[in-house]
Image 1 (tube, one colour):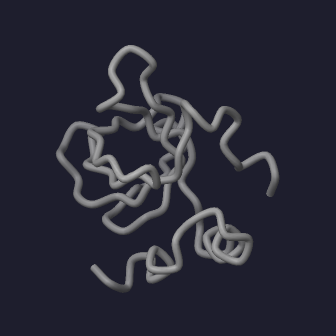
Image 2 (cartoon, one colour):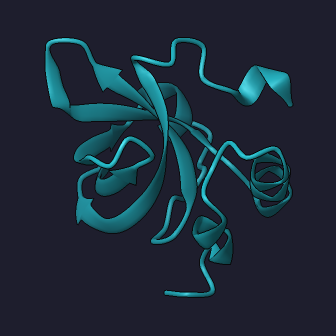
Length: 100
């Protein structure tokens, strides 16, 4: 599980998908309090990993535009529980997709 944590805390943050915007773009609430427009990275898109409202993701922030980013990892429910137990993500994000 350690490999699924942010490599650089300034450029990678956890996020919760708020809504899909179309064409592989999503509005994501990030753990640093910023709502960003994020796109699904090509490597993740090729795996047919469907991202939906409420999913917990790892966002790689663009270094030249801090209001945008790439979704690089989508976490499953077991991984979300592990992240919550260790305090990496807020407890209220644990409702996952049931709240939406």
